[in-house]
Amino acid sequence: MELKKIDEFSWEIPCRGDMNVPAVIYSSQKLLEGVRRDQTLQQAENVACLPGIQRSAYVMPDAHQGYGFPIGGVAAFDMDDGIISPGGVGYDINCGVRLLRTDYREQDIIKVREQLLNAIFREVPAGVGKEGITRLSARNLKEVCEKGSEWAVEKGFGSRRDLQYTEEYGRMPGADPSDLSHRAVERGLPQLGTLGSGNHFLEIQKLERIFDPQAARAFGLQEPGQILVMIHCGSRGLGHQVASDYIRLMENRYQGRALRDRQLIHAPIRSEIGRQYYRCMGSAVNFAFANRQLIAHWVREVFRRVLGSDVGMDQIYDVCHNVAKFERHEIDGRSKEVCIHRKGATRSFGPGRKEIPEAYREVGQPVFIPGSMGTASYILVGTPEAEELSFSSTAHGAGRVMSRHEARRRFRGEQIKRELADKGIHLQTASWKGVAEEASDVYKDVDEVVRVSDATGLGRLVARAVPLAVMKG
Amino acid sequence: MKLAPGSKFRYLKHTADAKFQAFGDTLELAFANAAAALVSLMWNPAEVSAAIRHPVRVSGKDEQQLLLAYLEEVLFLFESRGFLLHAAEGVRIEHTAKGYELEAVFVGDARRTGIEIFGDVKAVTYNDMKVRSRGRPMVQVVVDM
Image 1 (cartoon, rainbow over the protein chains, first blue to last red):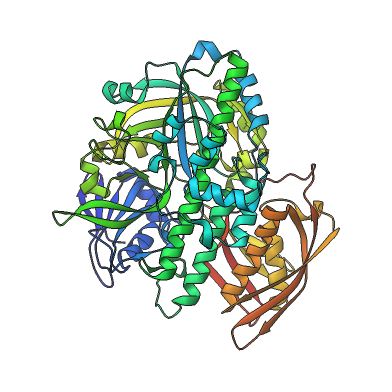
Image 2: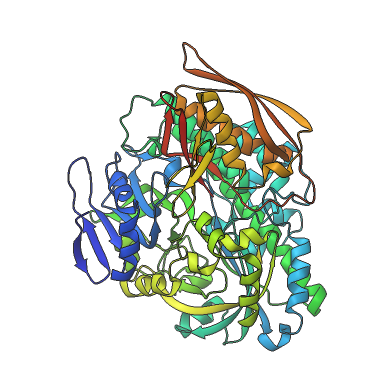
């Protein structure tokens, strides 16, 4: 596909044919080679054809082919003429990352990290279809979906401070579980408080390097060697079911619409079904917030038990990377409310936005970009430029480059465990085959993804952390 | 990719997730083999005994929607009931005025220790989906993992 180069890190698919707007791709020459090999660019073009899309369809540096939207796709839609699409959010609604800081240093935990990890592995159910320890009734579950992290805090899991340091304060506005299907509830019931499997993980990390001391200070990052805990998971089967339910409902309601890709089915934002999807998607967002809230609480408990204290284990932030939201953005020189879809992309609000915690308003919102298993993760900060570049969005991770099947053919979980051990990284998992599928070689180079984010200004580098212990679902 | 004669399904190259084709002498058998291909991404169906029989019934406005709903049923029963599919039996597809209806019996067992669950399929997608009912029936599916 012909791309117009704008500068070193941005390319454009000019508006043509059915496109309503151009598509802009943030990438490096190296990353672009991978993007060109799959359907990412075609999918970005398809998104640019959707009704009511504003300014441009955007593609983040970690992009790869998805369903409907590419993974790493960002698009904003006019509230009156625009649409909402389950394929623009993804199946794992509010898959996201929570980062806890600690006052511990590497030397404090190095001898007990195996013990810490094994205890966390016992406390936090992991793996495919594993049941959570919180047995719930369907009514309780709806309360979880209504209140999000607030529900967990009310039940004694974590503190009210955690809510302050969560995107949407841990409770998605407009969420309403009344329309959730029985199937969504049934899939969600056994899974609250579970990590899940696939690319989900929990890591004990050490801060390795600080690039931006001012932002680092605001986030409570003190010095290299400081211990952090990263939790990456989402809304589990409940979110998957909401996506599947509304793809079907929208298809049956709007079946006459000519679509370039069936997975791009959508509904007008203000239609009954569009509103229903938003309320149910918001419920799944809340389920995921509560899920990470429970897991963070158990992690703190383990630290307290093993090391004697969990003082200083504050939440730096909790970010969503699969979501649709109503947000205000600058369009044609005026502030306008839009329905923004971020699929495999992280919000990166710059300084001053009222949506971010007061303590961060001078520096900007924290953004977390987890690496693949055994590689570095990054802490970034949102920028003022990102507003114009990407409706304040940046990358969300490394992005896959190799199929799971191929990965399983090439790697063995046990061998990966040994290799990680040689690097000083302890690994615990529910499935060794699952580990093989997530070998770090199957992912893009996270360093390169972050370099593009920093150079373009989508999100600026603050710090780099490396894993000491990894728990894979 | 060459296919050995009599193969029931095969996996194709796909970057992020998993893509498979399933075959059968009839569309119904191709559907049954598609369920086997799907669960083989998560567990080994040969390790699961045929202890429980789950009758299922799904519908779709076209063959693709039917296939999607049918395979989603496997995921739903696994996540909500801990049901591991061994095989889909007696698949019957009927063309009705509204579209298609499918009946089958999912045979399998409850989840227990000893059977490794090594993969997590989040959802069945329409991406690159194909349903070929003429000639040698074949279905092609990409799942989100």
